[in-house]
Every structure is written in structure tokens, then in C-alpha cells.
Image 1: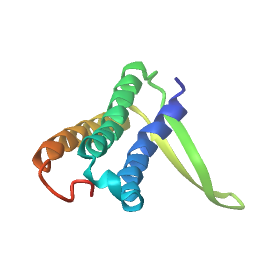
Image 2: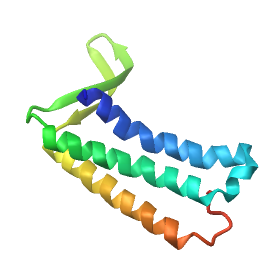
Image 3: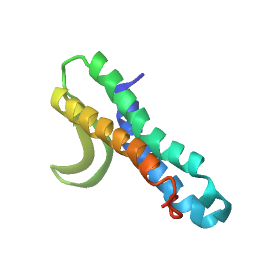
Length: 120
């Protein structure tokens, strides 16, 4: 897979999962009781980026890669863009953050299984 695509997935999957788990039960009240669905989505959107980060870390070529999402502002020689620089250190930090985040999600699913506001 292409590095740019994987970096975008690592960034956007947790955002999409947060939107799904946070907003959908507000509009579809019958989903509020679906603890398995909500817990699974919440955990999956953190564990999948961890797996993608492991893949990137294992196949990383050593040269830093800059992934540009969009240009925020351009004026003359000044070009401000929203971009990420992928290197060994940033991949290591991504592994730590997504790995610990996945463990937190797994723990919180068990800890909050009796809570009425589990979907939040």
C-alpha cells in the first residue's frame, strides 16, 4: 500500500469512529443499547491504525516521507500546508500512542459494560 494512503487512514479512522460513536446514537436512539457494536467500533478504529503503523514501521525505507493533506494558505513565497513528516521517530511515537490507545479502549469496554451511558 502507498505510504500517503496509510498515513491518512491512521489519522482519519479514529476521527471517523469518534463521529460514528458520538453522533449516530443521538440520531438513532435504538443504537444506544448496542454496547457490542459501539465498543467494537471504538476499539477497531484505534487498533486498525496500530496495525497499519506496525506495517509502516516494518516496511519503512529510511528516507523521511512528507504527506501533504491540503494547503492552508499560500501568499508569494509563503506556503502554509497541513502535512505530516513520517520518519523513524514519528512512526515509533505513532506505535506507542495507537498501541496504548487500543489498550485503553479494550480496558474501558470492560470497565464501563454496566454503565447506562456506554455509547458516550
